Amino acid sequence: MRVDDEREYVEYVEAHLPRLYRVAVLVLGERHRAEDAVQSALTTLYRRWSRRADVANLDAYVHSMVVRACLSDQRRPWTRVFLGGAPPDIGVDAGTGAVDDRLAVRQALRRLPERQRLVVALRFLCDMSVADVAEVLGRSEGTIKAQTSVALRTLRGMFDAPDPGAQLPARRPA
Image (tube, rainbow, N blue to C red):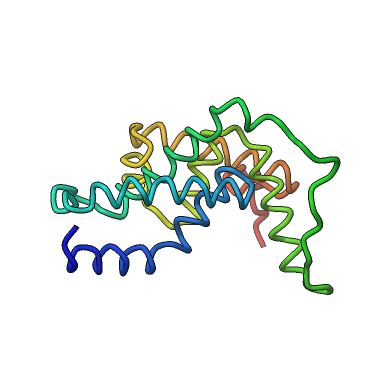
């Protein structure tokens, strides 16, 4: 790889790594597996970096690589093996409701089916458009919209929040 290409690759990765890592953590639910998936995707990207000009939307292309690496990781049989008695404790700042909210959202996301979890993570946590998510996942925009709708309805049910699309009672004249 040319020096200029390598510099551009490093700059791109440094700028986008936190977001790619966040996507992988949301898809896989584990930090260590997410690191492996992102590393695998970035290795592939490094090999293909000289062809980046052929890609219309580089960010969507790289996100799709990360998502595919995550899905590939989930298909491996060893991922279903748990080798410990209990997961390690992770320190949390005491007294912050935001931490509790994040944990509750993470747990709720893990309970969604894989396709719905991917769509919600990409749409709302990575702030991608319906068209971009459809491109990344190789599905139609209608499918993405339907899966988003079902996933949001399921999440609302988990948090016992009222459905904003539900019919409100008619107003009484004042």
